[in-house]
Amino acid sequence: MEILDLELTHFGKFHHKKMTFHPGINVIYGENEAGKSTIHAFIRGMLFGIERQGARTTRSDRYNKYEPWDSHGEYCGTMRIRVNGIVYRLERSFLKTDRSFRLINETAGTMLEPAQVRLEDLLGGATETSFVSTVCIDQLKCATDVGLINELQRFVCNTSMTRSAEIDLTNATANLKTQKRRLENRISGTVSKQLADNKKRLDERENELEKLQLEEEERREESLKLRENINNQRTELIEIKKAYEKKREEYRQRYEEARDEYHEYYVNTYDLSKKNVTTTTLFALTLFFACTAGYLWWMSSFRGFVQMVIMLCLIVSALGCCIAACLYRKYFAMRREKIEKKLEEKQMKRKKMEDYEKDYLRYATEFEEHTSDSYEECLDRLKAVQDVLNRISWDKEQKQEARIDLLNEREYLLQREREDSKIQNDIDAVTLAIDTIQKLANKVQTTFGVDLNEDASKLLEQITDGKYHSIIIRDDKSVFLNASKRYVPLSGVSRGTMEQIYLCIRLAAAKLLWKENPLPLLLDDVFAFYDDERLKQTLALLDTLPNQVILFTCHKREEEFAKIQRNT
Image 1 (cartoon, rainbow, N blue to C red):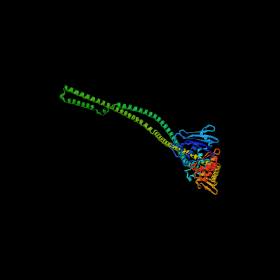
Image 2: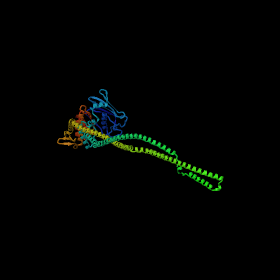
Image 3: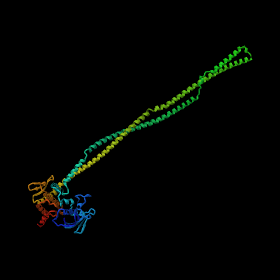
Image 4: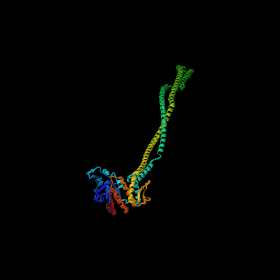
């Protein structure tokens, strides 16, 4: 691939800036802040675009860094390239509100779609990362010697072991190991033990619930039998109660009848207590009339008619009183006898009534006495069984809650076990990834790494005029230089030599990656630490490469040496 010309329509400080390039070494000279890095960034942006990093402006945000200073309505440019003899024109707008890219085949007069995909094909599959890691070298003005040693060592190891400088094998492996340690820390080693303990307690609850279930069934059967027995006894007692009530009702009726007869049978016991005063009075009158008649008889002076009439009246009265007294005495005796007989009958009826009353009361209490034994015993037993059932129900409820808690705990532990299993799978995957990376790295190192090391060593030997013959990468990923008599570590060489090694590895990687279609080399002030001799040898080396070289510099010596090299 060869860059023919550029037009920075609106890019950074440039407006309608045109530049033309030729094959071989192209030197773009300018003082500091002349815009060399802007042109360098424009070429990279035309090939791969410029994406805005975010809403906030940062130092690494190339979009904001190279946004046109004066014209914010346009942010675009054009570049023409030649690939395999065919000329293509790249037209790109970087403006975030009007981003576009067109790839035109000028030789055939056609537009290629999709533009970015077709451009990647023209670039031999190069990505922006691989492009920046090989043929596009920015200024290393911020790197210290120690930082450059680490960067160079990382770059050498990655390119030789992964075939791409964009893959940081050491950091990738370290990140995977860190991830593995984090995953191992997340695994709980007590889940299995907790699951076993949970299962043991769950089995205990199941056994307890099973025993309670059996006891509950037994108690329910007993309760059913007791209820059946109580119902039978209740039926029997109802029949007995009916018989007792019938008998009691019979005796009650008899008692009431006897009571009514007793109350209706009136006997005046007062007559029994009265003495026979009338008879005594009549006998006294008889005696009085007889005595009076005798007294009159005895008195001779009263023997007249009147006397005789009076005396006869007295005698008749005496006889009448005597007869009346005898009759009344007999009537009184007969009446007393009759009252005494009635009194005896009343006493018998009263006794009969009291007997009926006793039988009635006996039948009224005998049923309660008859039902207070077995029936009450069954009721008490049923109550006790019901209390046991209530206790079993409460125990079952408590154990069911405990069982549910254990099941929830088991589900949580199983979830943790599944998570641990998943984490273990991730650990196994990370371990496999580490092993695979090592195996693939070793495999690549035996092929690509060897070729890279050989090509980089040849380039380094040419640049250093034979002082260093080869670059050696040891198993511990340390990098040494093979001098004539000894191995020199990277820390033992100068900053300029480090950057020369860096350049050789990049050139070797670019050669191996894009053999068929060499990409242009974009070098932005990379020779600052080179001495004149090394610079001449480097420019001579670059002139022999099939790549187009665009050298950005603020030193006149690069331009002078390049002219000398072209003239020779």
